[in-house]
Length: 342
Image (cartoon, rainbow, N blue to C red; front, side):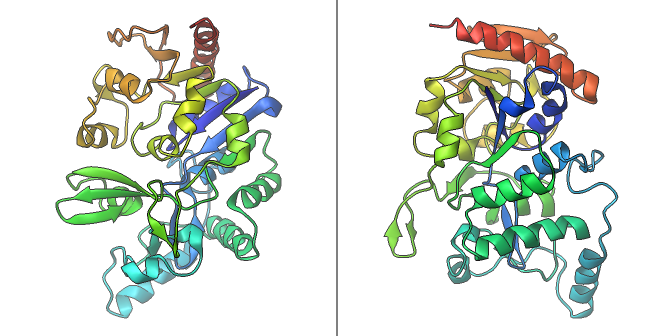
């Protein structure tokens, strides 16, 4: 049994090779839901869907987002209507009052469909409609994800990190914004002052004080050996690590992390800016600092970082299935080293 933690594209790129090393029937993938966003009332779960579409064989691998060959007629018409009606094309975040009304799981991340700022394909949108409809029927996000996994014939178990709302909020000099607004609408350009995982800190919600928690299924999966793909440790893994008892669970099992850096050079994404904003060195050393529970690491052959923990080196570039398989074998070797750590 093995459990992968997934946020962004790092772990999804690793999964094709992982199936030749780890039996898919014994593999669980836990996905970050802090990036989820509600647009026009429909819950979009980018990290869950990237794994869903990749394992389902329909992912657009050029963008690592959405369904390959999908049309965008509904999105295009929404944009055209917004322009013709005199609205700006940018994201329209609902008011603070409307952020905490209605469906609990959508809290703090509600956007209008007017000026839709994320390109959502038509088949992709059907997934969001299906998900939201099941949620409205009373199913949990875990149950809904299981139904979608069955529909896409997944060979691994796919879990959201929580059935409770968590929203990754980026604090900038211009104000706060949801991560998707920061990354998609503004291309990650705003300066970052801090990062907040709203929903993990006992905020008042609907007349009660509580914080998001991992599900029972997530807790069970975290008892198995854990692999963290080459992900952004702040916004891709941070929301999961902010949940009650998750760091403690990871400290009790064998954990291997793949660095998304070669020394101080990042492969892609906003990790360096976000790590610096929260006071962590943007480097492989900073990734290790973010994962104090990790027993072993996989880093690049050219990475000179001495982590003081068991390390397996390889070319960590993942551009195709052969690359993915190479890194997955390095992960397997690192897990064996990690098991030997007292």
